[in-house]
Length: 272
Image 1 (tube, rainbow, N blue to C red):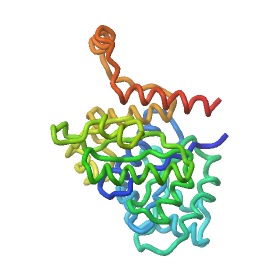
Image 2: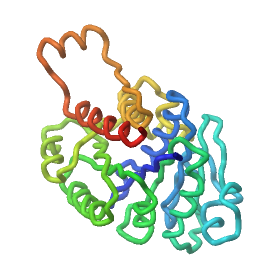
Image 3: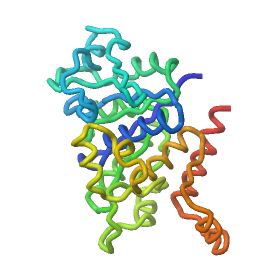
Image 4: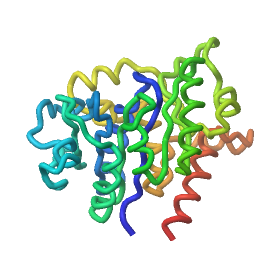
């Protein structure tokens, strides 16, 4: 059947796309024993490789797309268990629409493929969109980012690529922030996880490892595990017995959990 391909997109920089790609790739490999490939589809300003210490890789996605190298020669196996195809920091010109052919070739070798993308509405992001089976949109709880997220939703829908959902990042739980309801109602798209703004993310980046490796029990890592569980078809639930009983008594189900359950059901149907 081949791998399902998930594109991680946002038409705004600094919202956490690359951190999400790195964290999901790590968790799916380590915690769910999946064979995972993560790919840097941000051709003009790539940094996925930098998250793992790949400063100047000899062969990159740019070499493959320009016909200089075979795609398998651009794959680097990280010691955390997943594979990565970095892009070239020297910003050599490529045709982003050739990415789909490379990804289709890789599908037979993996369970899941996750694509990082450009933060700009250009051919680069469209190359990632068209190479994906599903899209995750990364957003933050503020009006400027919401505006670009609504634009990203339109781009996805016009390309007929299903939107898996929104990942709400850098949440501080302040009164001035947009609520989950605000964001869902404005975008008509379900929020799958709410990830807090945590300095540990930058600390992990300074050590060239995902936060899910450096702080596996942090709130941020737990949210990423919930998303990864959906992709792996295994529900992740960190709640203890007392929390579960309270939920039953007050019949409480958080919106993100319900949205994840719906997405997991859809993905399971596609696997059958």
